[in-house]
Image (cartoon, rainbow, N blue to C red; front, side):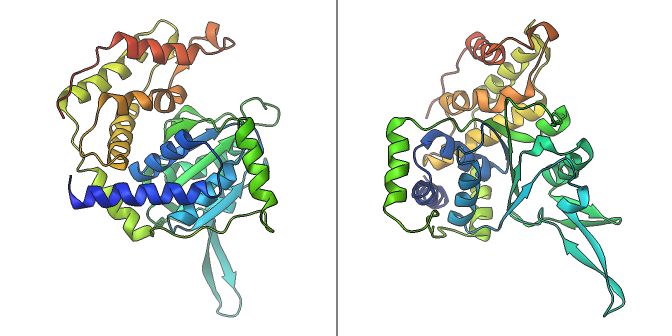
Length: 319
């Protein structure tokens, strides 16, 4: 194990420990979010209000020493409210750039499906290219750049479903879930022992160090048999009779990147099949469109993903 991989694993552990000072439980979820940050991928959190989605995003931004901005998506939100624009400066007799909240390292797009498709698409260039275009001028966004978007899974009135092109830009789709009884008691206990609602977290790293950590994940070895394993699983989603549109090649790349990042977090310089299995649902669930007769059936997408993994033999990888 190299010094870079050792440092990455240690910084990842310290960052997670710091975030856990504010977020009770959700160990698997927090690891997946951090892996996506290291892999350079965006995250879609689909769950009910009040489960800590904003807290998770803000806590990671603080622990990683990154700039955080929150955008509350509403039906009257305009693209310029996200990207910014030029405003006339009377004193200087010129137009000055007013950068929008998208110019940050971690952007929380809260209830993203409440904004119009035109406004949603304002994020698309930022998510795919790491840049925005204003008045014909292309501007790079701060790096690293991550969109963490949220949406309510059962609220449909007054919402606009995300188009497939934008869904595919999210590396992972995750659910926060309710805390169990012990976790909810711990939430109450922690709040009762302090004056303020929020916990003041410390920065474990910074943007420059995180960029180096991202580069270090590229050194993690992926065996050719594992590359074939990823491709075969994604291909199986396209063959299933219950599926109208299977996962795109971007899904295969997401598996590759997230598996490398997670392996590096564990202090390994090689990927195991379990690293890929761990992210199966998170990588594939939002990339699969079912046949119309299955739209109202529950858990069919999960069944498709489970069956795809079951049909593909697991390769034996020498460590």
